[in-house]
Length: 330
Image (cartoon, helix red, strand yellow):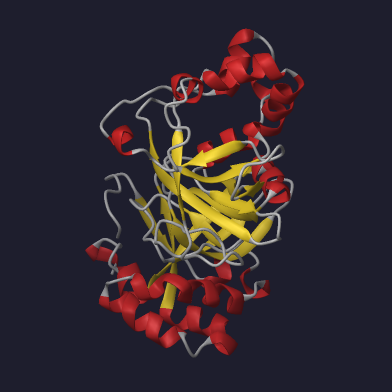
């Protein structure tokens, strides 16, 4: 397996009949996403299955059932599904009255430990006029949240897109402005969301700017020109992720590139075969996954609402699946 699962981790091999809704899914769609990253899996069994999968689009369900076994991996923590998305901002490659807020490349002097804070960086003029601007956007609040997300897409005036990814940071720790609003008594904890914060900052522009300065961390970007605009952003496997078919997992428990059967409960239940193609700093545990919802505002709202229980089951190559059982029951 992929890493450092704890000693109290349990592995249970299931039958495909045990997977709720398995027969109703579009397995062909899942095999397409699997093929997007399986060539980067360097173990012989995965390499063999990746080669076989190329001709199995019309027999995808049979392919998975023949060569894989569902393995329920548990570490004692309840399952939790959340969502993430790729922000989309309106911007331009040149500044104007509308597009006034720059996305900066990382200055060479910023990469040596802790540099200037967000406040100092944006009020001192130290990075202005140095050709570090990638683009200019029309909304400083959306830019702030783009920095939190770490990557996104800028919609240019001619309808084309510019994709940006994480390019470094100023070395200061991240401080939550949502928690600061709770500390001040502006909102209760259960009321705080990205949309609530954005609206408060826009209603209170002066105080809002001060609130953004509460987070001293500042993220720089790089242009990600190798990814076509009609494809998803790059995940941890350096390949595009796919909306509602790619998930971020904890690679200590789930191998990157592996198919994962998702049984998400909650207000909008989901039964779907997804592929583990990304990771996240908050995604820790055997039953923890972050579902990539898509790009733009609608995806952002959907991702923000997603916080549901359920179960996830990893599909492992047969010999690999049985290797997790104690010798006495192999």
